[in-house]
Image 1 (tube, helix red, strand yellow):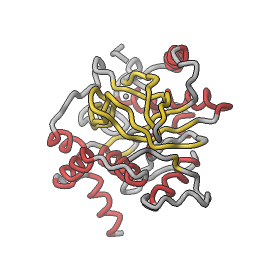
Image 2 (cartoon, helix red, strand yellow; image 1 turned 90 degrees about the vertical axis):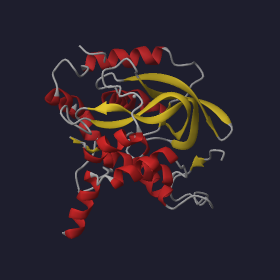
Image 3 (cartoon, one colour; image 1 turned 180 degrees about the vertical axis):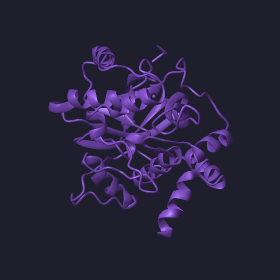
Image 4 (cartoon, one colour; image 1 turned 135 degrees about the horizontal axis):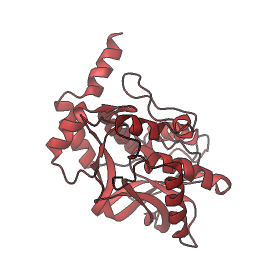
Length: 279
């Protein structure tokens, strides 16, 4: 089997009179509503649905990798459970149930949560460095998704799970993030609103066969512009992430530059949007 990725302020729930932040765009509240309700299923450009909670409950994420590759490529529920158990054994005693989101968890967390805050992790950066062979691409035309890789820093969002259902939610999260073992789950120290918080994060494994390394911006854009898989295109993934970050008041110049390159190549997401507009 193959080796199986300004100070921050709390994002208040919608309806809270203190939720309107003077310098925060209205989209932040929309993302808050969508993220808090796991029944909300984001739509990819062109109407293709992206990953849902039901998909995870039915083991659909594993199925798409088995269908695309082979039975032995995706981790079994027993292997996923063992991985989660090992990760929980390393959980610091004073750690809460925080999860650090930097990619799709920003716009499609799926799990319910008690609160969310902007946060930054140091020593790692967000990068399209992981090949997607089923969910956002295919074995013949791989896509790319984000991973946390060495160096720099990354600004994202931390979510606090409800303690009473944290373990159940983590089991579903493992079905999503650890389907092929391409990430290393770690307890990271993040900074949020001047405080240090321990949060669970998924760091890309450089020894995994899906690790793409440091591709040039042009090469990343070429892949993202054309790759599409069972849960949407790589271009959708990029655009949803950029939109979510903007909603949370976060600017990522790397993603903005990459999006401009993808647009210049005429991505599949753009074609789908044009098709929808013409209807």
